[in-house]
Length: 194
Image 1 (cartoon, rainbow, N blue to C red):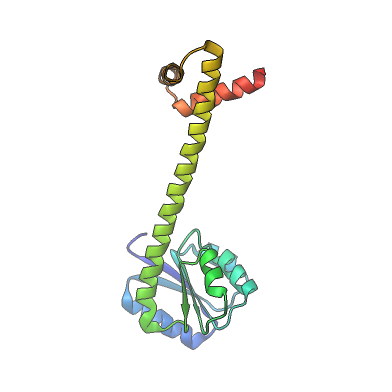
Image 2 (image 1 turned 45 degrees about the horizontal axis):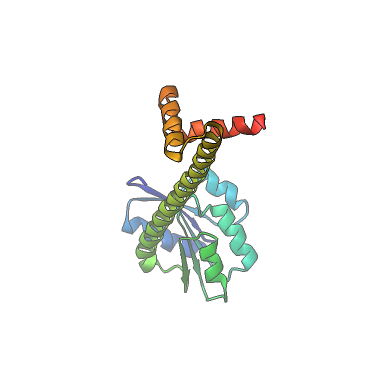
């Protein structure tokens, strides 16, 4: 994130919105935008493209939680939701929906900065974990394709696994491609020929 963070605050009460904006501006170099009602929330948040979304709501329902999390894009940016009271089961659902923070007892101006910092840190950690998981899945899929290609070469040429891999690697170097790409092409061609 850049030095100057853009924050969208979803708050219906004008007086609370003003105190939240004042507290945020006093605690850091933030560009703060307030959305006073939840109608067309997804479009409005999308148009502002904030770095962080803070949602203050008295008593969210499951449907409202789902709508707000979809609209605010918790997988795209940190989203913190402040609620007035503990609704049974909603904290777990909020975390499962991808919210970076779910804070009970409402949005208190003096607690904004620490909650904001924690939400950003948690979001960055989760984004890194999602990235690593995607890379691991991709590597596993590539490994499976390479193993299938080696098996095809071993069967077709009557060679050992090491020789089959050496053939794949040499073909990849000769073609300026990755071993996984050459293996994928071999497996695809084999499927067409059988």
